Length: 184
Image 1 (tube, rainbow, N blue to C red):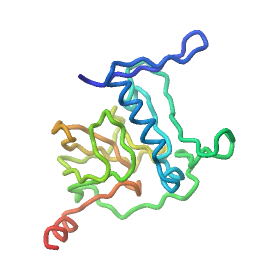
Image 2: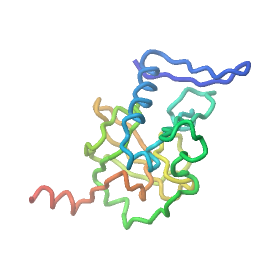
Image 3: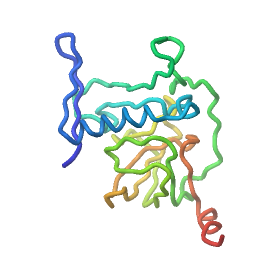
Image 4: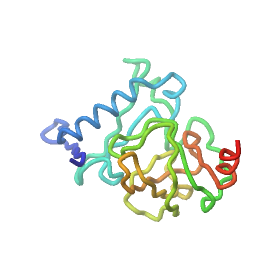
């Protein structure tokens, strides 16, 4: 069954409702965050966005961020990098999207996508994001470097994900690199 999760705010309370799969996925997200290394916890991998516009929640959900706080309860000193401003400059990678044939995500991935960390996925198609409603691995507020990749997930279903070309937690493989791996 498909994962369903809805977050609402009613009468001064936050309500998280989901089917079994949705609640398991939420638990997996929390568990994944709790297992981040100190190095990973200092990157944008230290949080998850749950929102309907990102296809990680049902329509009408309140946009929510789940954040790993390393120095609890000191709430002001441990927010980690701000994906909107970045605590470190984001460097533009020299990547030509039409040449990308595969990718590998090194950091945590939301369970609803049925994608594994550190696994290489063959790209079926790649196009520039133009406001489509797809789950996007955010790196910054601007979206000019986000491309949508279509690929087969671990359940062999064709899915789409938006990835910023400058996200260093994602490895991209072009034709030349795949040939080098094959020849090695």
